[in-house]
Length: 142
Image (cartoon, rainbow, N blue to C red; front, side, top):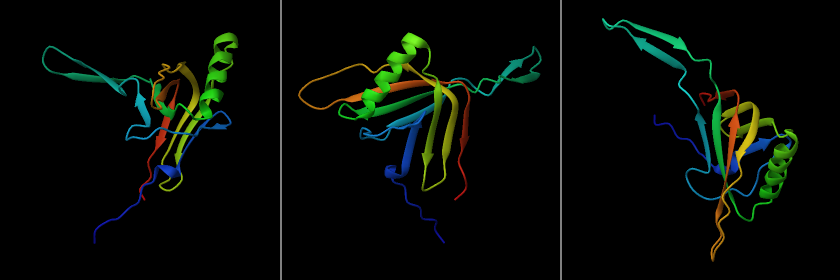
């Protein structure tokens, strides 16, 4: 029998510190999670022998796209400015799908770059780029 599943972006939560992010842009790449480096590095010898070493680098880059009218832009900009002035902007970041149970947890995350501000006749997106020190992802079998 064929397998059938539903997915709705409405079931996805993004929480930075204690703030739930809201006002997401539209598209297929609204939340992007990328590990910064490979899990293993390899060295190939003169005769083709291979040795691999674990990099122990679990850092990540996460991009979240919001509408320019999202209330979360003000919250994130205040946290970005606070971090710039005091260094107190390192918080946990959690991305969770309530329907599938998929979760991505970053122990310590910070806003790497405030979004480019683009204004015009139509609403624009604001791309928030976070860096994280240690990403743990769980994708359960449903």
